[in-house]
Length: 296
Image (cartoon, rainbow, N blue to C red; front, side):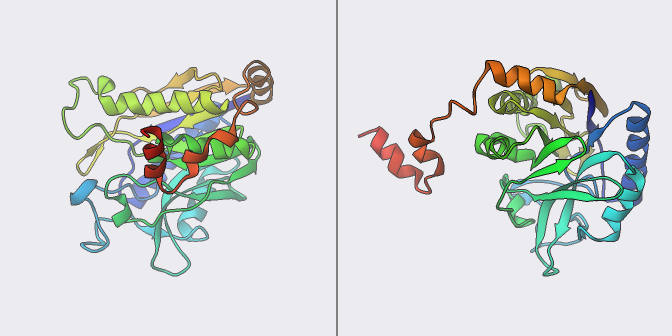
């Protein structure tokens, strides 16, 4: 059996606070026998303080932006020292080798190795004013299985998870800083429409691709953003095995990765029964031409 953990927690610009929180969570995970812990998007240095036209921008300020770090820098090394033999996925702002370009990034690592990194492909609202976009989805061999990484808004695009499933992902770690709706917010945040969408995407992507889905998220508030938490572990049938709901904490589930895959994929054939020959519009750059044909 493999023990998976999804974290909901609040990370800020204070790096020492971040490291202390990661240390506390790693200790909790080790005490619970966790093999793979997924921390939120921007767990090193926090996320943007707002989104949309009034969001943080490189053009207007650098003081409110997350610290940009290199994958081989001291910040990642500090995290590796903290987590030891625990396999962890973690989000951060990556500084490119050119010393200027920033990416909203994630890595899967333990104390001795960085198994892989990812740069966020899909950017919501004004995020593109602060980060450059990534361009690919890879899958990485780790001690807990073949792991794919994606970040927040990526989960709204079925193609992202499907690419990783086709590359052999058994587990997809979806790291988020997913906020509540900015307008007409529900009185009970668990009923908020953005909370609903967050949870729906998690279950759908797991079931679509018959993978284990570990969704982490920021919790609490940061700047103008109010996060919805709801970190969870979902099985390949779309069943939520554990969730934090709105609160901070750790959702933990024991799973049989290989056995569940054999059982699920022997009864449903979502990958086998695909029809790529009819999916032309999915990869068409000019969607309008297909819409025109549909109404012809």
